[in-house]
Structures are given as C-alpha cells and as structure tokens.
Image (cartoon, rainbow, N blue to C red):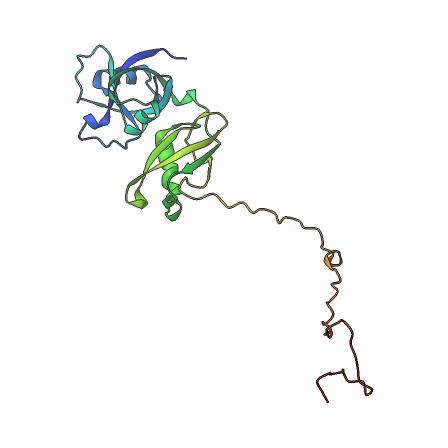
Length: 240
C-alpha cells in the first residue's frame, strides 16, 4: 500500500466555473505537478479518500488555481457524489488520501446495477452509462453513483452498484465488461402468486338428511270422536 497523506476536503461548489457532476477530483497546481512527476508515464491516477471510516475512489483530473497554497495540507476538491459517499460536507475537513494507479485494481468482468429511476429504461442510455462508468473508473460494490444522462436532457441519475466481479472494488474500463440491470427502486415488486388452497372432494351424501314432512291436520269434533252418516259424509248435528 502506498503512503497516505492528510488533505483538506473541499466541494466543487466553491469553484463557480466547475461542473459539480464531473467524475474527477482536482488539487492545487503544486500538488498536481508533484503527482505528475511521481507517476510519470501512468495512464490514470486515482485518489483513495478516507473520511470517518468511509472510503471512495476518485480519478484525478486537472489542477485548479482557485485555492490558496498557504494551507499546510493539499487541498483536494471533490464532486458532490464523492462527498456523499464519505458523508463529508466539503468545507475543508481533514481526510486522508492514498494515490494509486489503475494497475492497483482488477479489471471488472461483471457489474450489476440498479437504477433509482425507471425513466432509465425508456431511453437509449445504456451506452451512456457504460461511458460514465469508465470515466469514474474504480467501482465499489454497495456504492451509489450519479451519472448525467444526456438522452434525458442531462438529468443526473443515481445508480446502486449491486454486484462487482471479480472483486468488491474493480476497474470499469473496457468493452468486455458484462453489465446487468436490476429493477429500478421506483418499480413495484412483482406480485407473488399464492398457490390455490387444496380442498378435499365434498360428499354431498354426508350432508343429506331425509326430512319427514308434517301430515295435514285433521279436524275433530268436540269430544275427540269423528262421526259419519251412512253415506260416509261427516255427521253434522245441525243439519236436518
């Protein structure tokens, strides 16, 4: 591991002419010149920045003259997405940096990404995303990144890095990287179909009971005896 040094962490919002969505970090001119001499001939240089037990990797861009060199420590200017990862305000907090080249990281073979916004699936943005990953360079599993999508009018879209292979920290550079996508965070989960509850066959005979219908009432005369005439008609004492 290369030696680390203490740096001041600053946000790009202090550089009014800079775009906060840039994927790179900047340092003051003296520090940049020293790094160019130290890593002469290297293709890319990355800052491994640590702050409060959190780490982010940011590629080094150009230098800036917007900061004073009177400080004891190097002034490291970071984009907003990088400050969010390490939970820093970017107002001069003291952090540590270790400078590394791309040779320090294994090349990515597979990256699984989850967009935060389903609008990503309604645009031709996948090629843009691949270019954005290459610009960021070093990708960490579990990291959230933000990339402006030009096909969506430059809208800055957030993505979660769900999986990386062959390691948890990889170099996303090259066309051989397999990029897979999970459903976006704003898409409802697929409904889970419950299997039908099995019911045993019903034997209707078990529930069939013969019901005895009541017999029609039979009228009786006073005294409880039914009397009939010789021709079989009910006897009527009032009939002559």
